[in-house]
Length: 249
Length: 375
Image (cartoon, rainbow over all chains, first blue to last red; front, top):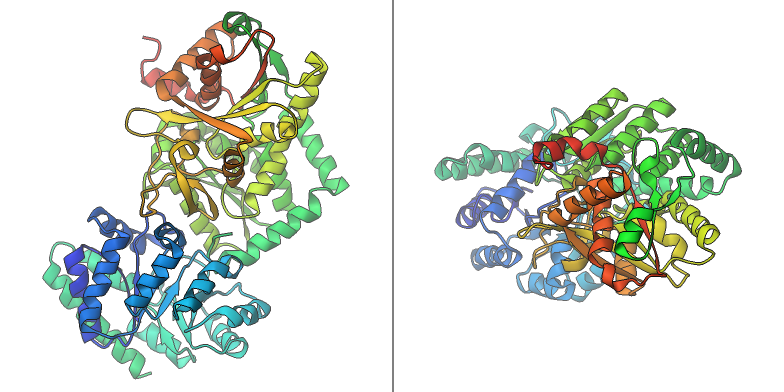
């Protein structure tokens, strides 16, 4: 599942990029709302956030892009955003809007179980899956607690750290996937540090139900900022490679 | 605690360690010894004869500026440093704006034999060169932060990101009553000594409570430290935020709105969408778009009032206190002094006003010289 930031690098190109992802094998999408201070993100996704903001993205425009995508596609869409954006929009209004746009799932990386009551209440009200992070520091007991409130899928953070490409995947990941599978009933999607088709394939082979790759896509946008045509083509090709790697696993 | 899952177990471990040690005799004994013998507590509550005469009421300064390291920050770094040690952490990290918390952390690391990494916005590295050098002298590594506005908020982001990555071995020593739970509570606890001493001292000197207690507010640690002892008393509590210049400021409580920022829910300077705005102040320590949740509570419950002072008013107060009393306040603390000067009409002759002089201005001298302040 690819991740990009809505409005990165700008409104129009972002729509083109997302459509390309859908046309090139992405069975589901994870889309981020740009935030000024994303604490779980490494430098590449921070820059993606900044580009979108510098080009005038707002929460309202994020929703307009989603509307545009929904006109043509029913692809499952998860959105990921810092809690403050939804809080300022008004939680009820936010979930209502997402429901109207047939958003499948919402993940706030800065809302752990302890602060999730309001979010979960609204997610239930509007039939949207509230997704939670599980990490290498999450205890089995906590996984069981999370399993009671989480819906849709588990976003398994593969390593301790921020988002961003890594040379290799965490050596403890196989055990971690096994543990999550044992303690939780939801499908497991692995993210953070998954940036190559080989890594994605490996993660699926280890028993994960999906792999999430964000920084690798954002990096293509960053590196091709001067040529939108190259950018869109490269995104399409990379998405195809990733999708095929996952399917072939 | 509004933080990613990775941090939650570590923050719970910290909360447990804090609850376990804060009232433990051995811990208190060690901390009190260091506060007294190493940092120089208790600090004087000084009656300012000259400015009291001139402004027309009784003004006392709580001299946190006389502490080792030059500011109140060391009360907290010693406390948390001992906590880090007891938790067997291998490394201490900190964020810093003005550099005072960074210096206090570097000193604490040297004292306790722990490596220290200080994250500091590139803009602050530039305007607080002296403190950067001091941190290095104490053996700390200073990491310039180039993201965002390159000031305190970005230093906090980078420290949080580093913490996320090294959460099992590293102790994040936050310098103000901000960040995720349990930090606001921990920092307040270690700063409450300012208020405890002040209350005893004023009762001894004047035989009654002060009319008002005034302190500057960035994140809000020196202010809550001194306010906390007077919350139950009939004492006006006044926090002073950075009024900045015509364009930008740090009036988080004055002009911000409630949001979720850097781990806690509190007032924050933000757009209507919830994007965090860049703050501005001549004093790096007040250049922060967030504020401790306890101040949001004190504001909303109207137990404390919050005003603001501009860059130029703070500079004027710095010069005034230096010339009249022979005391050079930090630019941060000068905001509290300026507030009292500006609002002198509100006080009558018998009133007693205590200003928390949270730090000394030596660190600001290079910046003042660069700005041609005396010319």
